[in-house]
Length: 142
View (cartoon, rainbow, N blue to C red):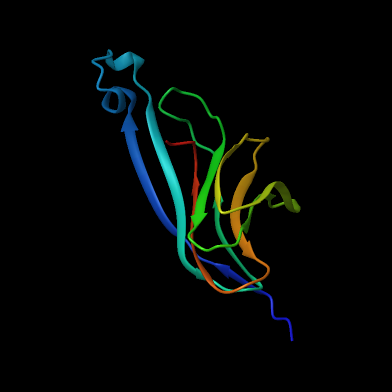
């Protein structure tokens, strides 16, 4: 019997910083941008046939005043690849797959499209259970 499970987990961190604080510069107050990083995170053990997702999340403005998009980052310490995915979602349409890769590690920025929200997922199709770590950020961080 094939049981597919969708696990929605989320922990959310919100960090607000000013550009001057990030760079250590003494920029005048008029040149500083407030940046709010929203991060959804999930970690644990994933089993065959499971999908773990975090979100929804909207891109926010980075410390430079740009909106580069959302960042998916994740890894597994298992010996087999996971399928890492990002879906765009809105209240008027079904989720649309906008990024997918099969790897042990992912770090990708997905450009914003109109007023979309994003979900990030890790899926395991075969093999033994393995640990995973999945993060979706509202703008890219290093």
